Image (tube, rainbow, N blue to C red):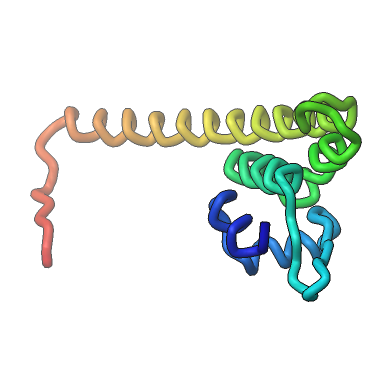
Length: 130
């Protein structure tokens, strides 16, 4: 298939595919007429990259998954290097979630404090403008 068809089937732009080629994630094979030529394996690679990117993985984090597919494994996460990336991403997400919980607790404390002030007696009237 040509680059336009691969882009359409994978749900990405041709520019994205060219970028993946420059990053070494997608092989750049050319037919006799000089046009890029792709197969179903390339479609699997691009779909794997896109799925991981949708999950928040950086482009370089997709490399072990791509290499796993290129090595002939049935899935990009069937290799130890891919599992290591999953583990790192989970640790990163756990850290972000802990930060968000902390911020939530701080906002909840501010809200409680503000509500307590309001319940202590009449407050000056607040008016919205605009």
